[in-house]
Image 1 (spheres, rainbow, N blue to C red):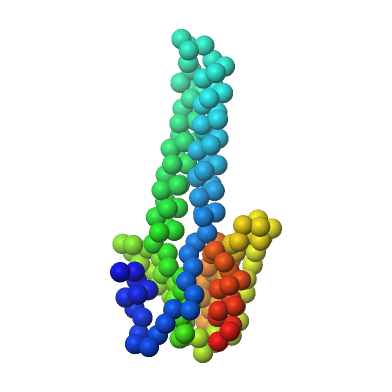
Image 2 (cartoon, rainbow, N blue to C red):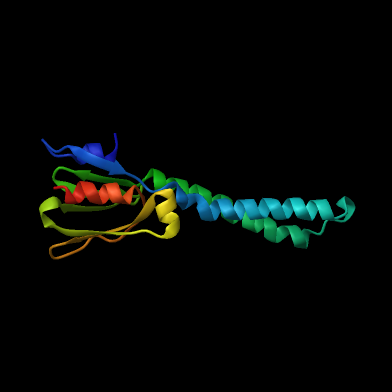
Length: 155
């Protein structure tokens, strides 16, 4: 059972649920691709009897960092839940160490959406929910940010 389904109050329904956008994988994918391309070029241009480990070591480290980054992004995306219900906005991330933020809809003053050019093309953005007395921390790289805002502001 997801965290969201576990904490719904009686009579509360989910209007919209989203998650982190798949673009969270970009840094790891780029590192793995560069390491792989560098390894192919290095192996193709070097005599196989005299492979220089000093040349391949940085590529191995770049590949390891990229693989670690991909796993970390997958865990972060998998453990993040973002939803708008008929009563509140719910944001949760983390598995062992959970961080949750909830704001009741009657406390919301505005919802700011910030999208880069890439965000507009691929459908992600950052959201800042401003409320009376406090604001939610910015929710970064959220999939479908305009739909999220529309569900919050629709009441």
